[in-house]
Image 1 (cartoon, rainbow, N blue to C red):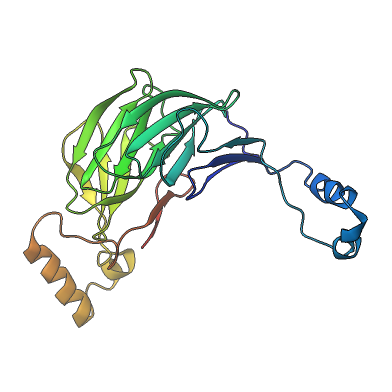
Image 2: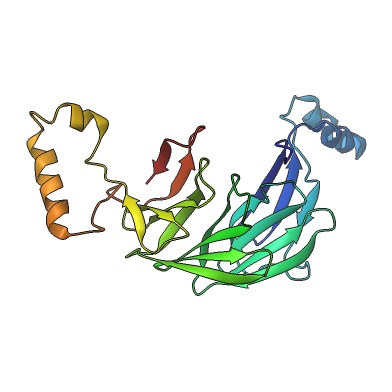
Length: 249
């Protein structure tokens, strides 16, 4: 199991860093105090300690991304590998111990999100969301794209795997739609609809006029018209237990 003390981050300048959140950050201040007595007055005031990265991969690193790194994720088995996605239309897998590139995938559009399943026992797939209507699955074992999930109408902004099933994948797009997929089958299993709620079902005897009108409009628009947000879906997070999800838009 991966150690949850290590924080993986990326930035717009195409750099990636790993931090130890349980490390000792105070050595930075001590070093700064030793650099010169002229700064003693400024350093005498308490400062919030800053963590130094254990690993830093810059743009000059061989194989590093050319543009903004939009998404990162740990390999779910241990912290020995991590995955990065970038606006240069590449997804790359890195060895944490030696900061070297292991393999890479090419995407048809700018990469907006990468995700791996913590529940996976039989596959080693990376979900790749792109700035286009396609969602792709890359296999770390073969180093190739093995699936293309087609069903979104707008650019896919985020993706996350279910905690209860290794084959259940959820994705959100720029149109506010959130689809649930079983990667073993074609077509989405269902779509989240912000107008279909537990509270609405409990008070179905007297729903509000706006809810009725919205639900009627969604039905008239046909399959795939259900929306989870009025604006773009920006993030997805499964809650512990895997039966509920948080979505942001």
